[in-house]
Length: 419
Image (cartoon, rainbow, N blue to C red; front, side, top):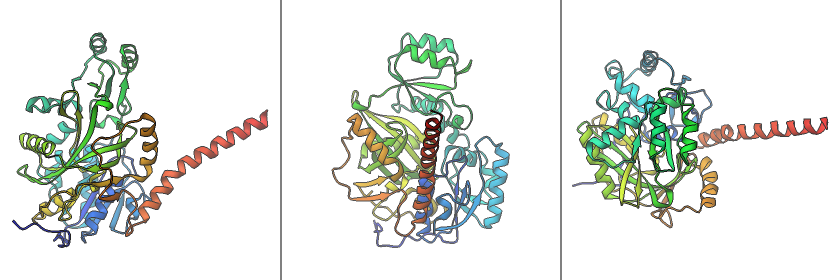
């Protein structure tokens, strides 16, 4: 079998553009910038939906055109679909869609019939992305197919939580049940660790008569390892690109976005993920979060993102293929070159890894499987051939902090004058 090498040019179809699709206000998204660079370097015309003209994605040298379209995630689906169709008509030719969030992935899947004339995307089952993005839907699928996941409760009333508090094993974590709640009125902000029954009941009083939360088993970090799987599956749920890695740091610590990660070969985990995808019939790009529980020796699936992950550029095979390139090649009828993943590669998100490093050092937590030395480092923002996104990120990232310090200085100065 002939396997392409990194010196062999990747034969991308340059007549088919790519479009970064996002819903919501998160301008500092390095995943979108990574996708623009990845396909843009192959000569694929790249377009993106942006919050304004001065987001990092909007200033990339590889962006052919940007569409300023601020959204909140609270718009009616019909409005969002019509907006996408307008963009499609403006581009003027079939375009590969690249969602960067669950809302966009679900929207595309649930309105595939309307969007298919203008866009190319995997033919995933209509209801599947929404179910996978839901904590409850994912847990039910894991139970159905025998995939380990943390023990969980989906309470329907305060009384149920009250009864559970008397028998639960603490600490535990609370998360929003549905992926989209963060855009509306979330019951909790991110992953919330709950120390005991009194704290649980105090929080639950604010969740209303129908709590939109999941109460989940806490996997102690000193007894666990965080693993990630990224892959692209074709219409037959066959993996055309499969990668595994270990998360070293995240921000916020232990519960947020990946700040630092390494590629580490894990055939067992890759096989588990591929089997699960085959069973549920998913196709497209996936970003999975697993936690290895050393207490029982099992990998437990925490999150299933039915779209590209922000850290996807961590992973590349010997032929230069990442999941975004794999999808574009497959949807345009090109062969996806095979190759082993480049083990030992490191991915660093510059603006969040520094505070994450400080937090992890204070906690004394280390990642056992992280290599002592990286075989190569991929930075989320800095790229020699495309520096404007980095400087734009820096300006937007630093400005709120400078403003906060200025306001603090003024308030203290005013207080001193009053005294």
